[in-house]
Length: 336
Image (cartoon, rainbow, N blue to C red; front, side):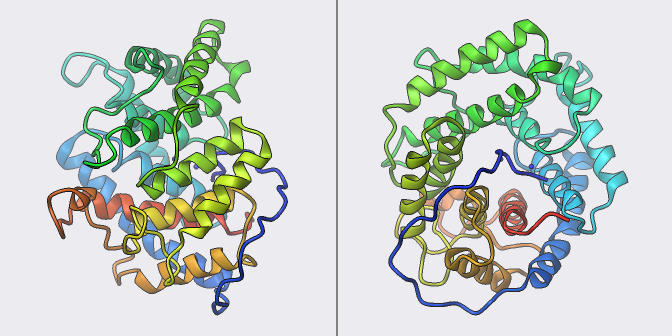
C-alpha cells in the first residue's frame, strides 16, 4: 500500500531481538526534509506520466497520491491542489468509459493501490462511487483458489507462487480498507467483499515465507489486520532479522539493500507502532537518508534485474521506489 496508516495501530508488545549495533540518531527534522525533497519528484513524475501515457497504472499515480496524502496528514509541504486534481482524475479515469470505450479500473493492482491511497483521509464522493465498481473487479479477477494475481507482476524464477501471494495480500488490505467504510457502501458490495475476503484468507493459510522480503513486510500488515497479535509479532521478528548491516533490506533474502523494499519494510515497522526510538527504524532511516539522490529520488532498479536483466533501471522503478522510501520514512514520524 496511505496519511496512512493502512491499518489501525494498536499497542503491541515489543519483540525481543538480539541487540544490533547502535546507529546514530536520525532526527524527525532530517526525515521530514528528506520526504519534502521527494514529494516534488513524485508530483512531476506522475504529472508527466499522466500527460504522456494518459493512464493511471498501478505504480505511477496511486503511489504519488498515497505519498502526498500521507505527507499532507503529517503537515509536510504537499501541494493540496495538485493532489486533489490528480486524485479526481485518477478515479475518473478508472470509472468512466472515456478510454478504449470501456470501464476497466486499470490493472488489478491499480484499483487496489488507488483504494489504499485513501486510507486515513475523509471519504471522497468520487472514491465512494468508485468502490462498488472496484469490488466487481476484485470479484472478476479473483481466481478459483481464492488468490489474485496482476497479469504483469514479475515472478521470481525459483518462487513462482510468491507473486500471487503478494497480490492477494495487497487485495486483502484493500478489502479491509473498504470494510472500514461499510456504512457508506451498498449492502451488495459489503456482502461481496466479505465473500472475497474469506476466499483470499483461505488461500493465504498455506502460504509460507519465501524468497521475497516484500512478501514478509506485507505479511506483517495482513497479520496485523486479520491474525492474532502473536502471529504479527512472529512475522515482525523475522522481518527485522533480515535487515542488512547497512540498515536496508534487499528485494530477496541475502540481497543488497534496495530502497523500494526498505521503504516497505520500514512502513511495516511503523504500522506495528515502532518509531525513531527503535534501533531497526533508526538504521533503516539512516540508510534511506544516505542513499537519497540530489533530485529527491532513490535509485531503485527494476525488479526485472532479479531475473534476467541486471542493472536495469526504469523511470517507473525509480518512481515506485521513491514513493515507498518516502512512505516508510513518514510512517515512523508522529502525525501533527
